[in-house]
Image (cartoon, rainbow, N blue to C red; front, side):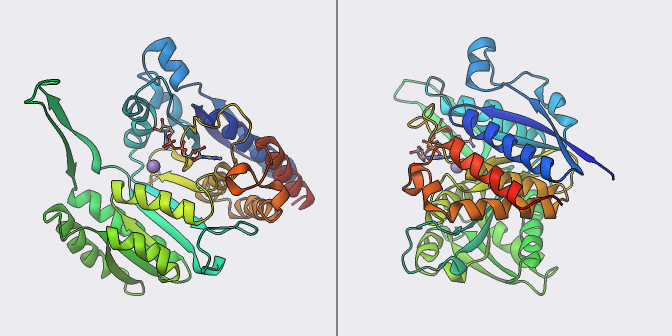
Length: 361
Ligand code: NAD
Ligand code: MN
């Protein structure tokens, strides 16, 4: 019997990240117990707001080196009530995403069994999307500056840049992902009416890359119209690709339409596998509920599913997804964001029990 051990770097970060990441580890351990060929070796990294208070930085300068030898990274959230959001975000999460060139941010969403999603005219079969977010440039390229602070002459810029290389690689990834899904359908989200340089190039490159994927049916939608289409005609969408800012917004909307920000997962993927990819729930630190034990851990569990798929373990991924769906199917196991009363610990235990009930593999 060959035992495979995956080395997973765990960065709980801040707020409810510290509650949901240990829950994710517990579920992965439970999976390992019932699937003896699979083992997880976790390394803990206590980076984030507390580390900032102690060291003046969110993570050490050589932090990427410490992560590099791992097969994947499981990340909670960066965001602390006492530290500016742009400091926590750029000092940790974006440092890893950019340092490891995780240029594809992948965000699936569907309405899980038992969940009362807000779109009353929509069946679960009609909302089954993956949003591909360009994760390395665009509006979040980090280019810009601020001068004459506090004076009437103050100027500040955030310059959005798109490169041909960056757009080609994300389009190729998105068309490939669309091709791998049953409906083979891609919507390219754009804003080339108002943004007449970079977004026009974005559209042209989409057109060019589409010729490599003749079996993918694709269309274009302006980002503002895309929000309305997500609400009014959810079944007309399958895979979407959008710039960093556009997809950031659309994916929070998608998560809410799926029932809660607390269930949606993310993969920050380096498709070329030069570096470890990073998996995280879509939500942030949730200051309003941290420390209460109310955080919904499903977004983290689903992120673990994505991690296992990325690591080439589709059977194990399927087992966790099945356990998740069994648990969401029972309203007594819903956390408050889903209208229930269950705690993080109760949901976690229920998922571990469901894994156990599936028996040995
Ligand atoms: P948030 O996602 O933390 O919270 C938004 C709302 O959703 C809150 O009411 C919260 O209670 C609820 N919520 C989120 N996750 C939940 C869960 N698992 N279970 C139950 N309810 C949940 O977003 P925010 O309030 O805009 O940001 C708070 C902090 O988190 C900020 O510092 C922000 O910068 C940071 N943030 C970090 C990331 C990240 O690291 N990836 C992402 C988003 C926000
Ligand atoms: Mn976001």
